[in-house]
Image (cartoon, rainbow, N blue to C red; front, side, top):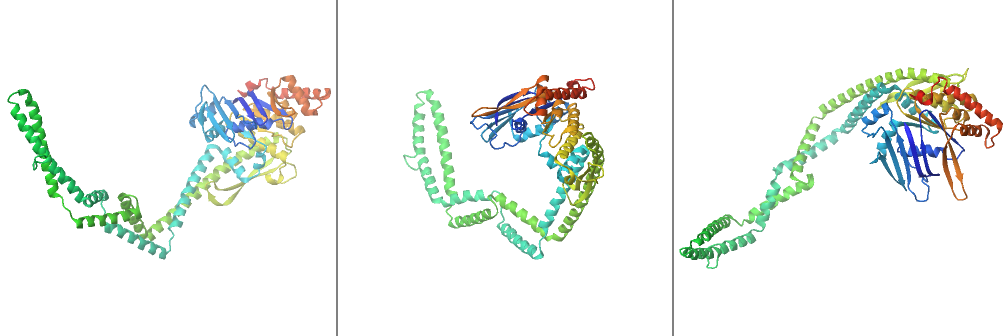
Length: 569
């Protein structure tokens, strides 16, 4: 669950540091004081988009840091997602400098997507705008699938895989649909290209050998002049050649060794040099004898290189690429020559894939209908708890007209909330206040089934008052007994039910405005309730009403004789 939130230099917040506890925490304050900014900062640190003008405007970077203590279920899911948790804590931070953001998990820099993975596990934030999304059929279908759990998720994945397979085969069939004229034209072109490559009779590595041969033949005269000069300089034909000079030196040294045996070593070395030079000179002589200046061979080599280079320019950078292109064209030609058989097999594959898709969609529909029966019963019970006079609720199914990755279903939430009225689509009958209660009922239903540690409701009380507000407060109290719950509210009935009460205020000076936060004790909470009941002017009557409301809420909260922390456990 969320243990601490630290916000600095964000919108109207200069610096706020707040600890959170188990149970139900409410945030109250005047309109515009910055209650939603505090929740918005939590959205931002969990990977949400940064709105324009969200930083303070003085150039200072913003910093948001949230400390979570994941419960057992969340810990398991975080470990499965490869998210490190140190000392049972997960610290997520986001530094915002202009348009640049840096996210960190326990000090390690990560992507926003990585943080959003954690957010999906740790927390569920319900904002005001989500009420209207409940009217959209696609949102209703997503809620039903989530409610269906693993069975529905598995069926949906099988259906999605079948749809992707069918679409791929169908796309291949469309691409395969050449006219007879187009097929004949393509086959002629392939035969020409295959013949062009085959006629060249290419061999792997041939181009490199030809390059070396052409370089030698093109420079044969210069090469022969250089090698002939070397043969003369190292031979025995002239008195100043190396061979003759070393021979003379050897004869002198052999004569001298008779007078000093120490010179035998140098004599042996010089003999080895003379022998090596003699071998070298004979090797050069053989090279000169074998070399040939053949203009015709040079021309033929150049033509062969031109042929190979032209093919490489057309079919690939290397000779291996050209040979691979030949294999590809042979395969395509074979496929076109067997076009009718391939077409028959492809059509059979498409038909089989569509049959599998229909079966997978039917299984998904069955799982959804099973989930819908439970969803309808549980939702109706929660709606009655929220002070609806009537809560006839059902989920209507109809065929979507096509089968895709999401199956073949379209659904619509149907409801009747007043006696004597028929069940009608939710989008046609629900008011703003009713939508808020319906969404709260659904979120409560999900909260009872999942292991999300923390739930946040941003002004769930829109459009309600009186006894309905009291019912909503009691429902939030129930949710708070199972999950850490944060709620922004304007209603004293909800604020009175809180285990913990935070007040958001705005300090205004001549040239600045700043959001501030205060943790209220029981007495301060009663005064805040009085403000919510009576407005800016707090009288003895509003204080008395606030004290009575607080006392009544305490009886509801502790009707079991347990503390808030004990109820959570």
